Length: 299
Figure 1 (cartoon, rainbow, N blue to C red):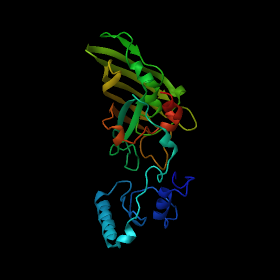
Figure 2: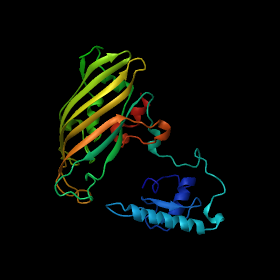
Figure 3: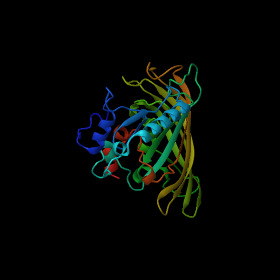
Figure 4: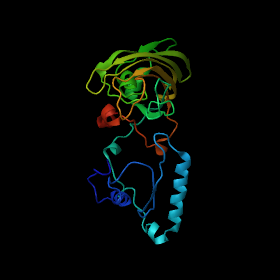
């Protein structure tokens, strides 16, 4: 949809993508496709739904490669390589960048078995979710008690507390949570030891959330437990491991997305993102409404 509605129709990336899908009544469409650099669509290769069929996908890819090899060279290549600086489409998301020094956590989510489940539902244990959770230095300072001594503790407030819930990092489904839906939430950071520049902390938290809006009537109740290490010389976290475990309940089952019991136990794991910025273009899924462009422009 973002491609179909992009205003810059003259851009090279838009033109080549439009050419690839020229015979598709829906225009540019989601899926996994194989195409030539010249813009010829060879095959749609994502097979099987809701259960992916790896064997059939491999067969379709091999079939597409065979078609590619049968084409004359002048029909399958381009004579001039596109320039990433001028020929690439840009979107609003490209303006959302990670502020310097951001604590970049990779969050992995997976739900447990629940009555009536099928793979039609994304909550099925067969599937897992990966997201990013970001805290700017001005936000993650809250995790460090002011008194740098063993057993010193601090109660976390604001975004460093709320973002775990409002951005759906505690459940597999994606729901519209607002601050007023948080009925009870506590997150405490306690220093367990100090060795040189390294400050080890323990994180403990509990959450109770219940929504009552037009878009969400679900609930969540669970806890968080974790540990992290902060380097007070470089003023950055060098280690982070935390888990959340709790009961997620959907207020309304959507016929095009959900099957089975509305309640499910969910576990999530957060750790420092092992990928460098150059290898990882992924931003938090809630970058637009959860963070906003002003968030990254004002570190």
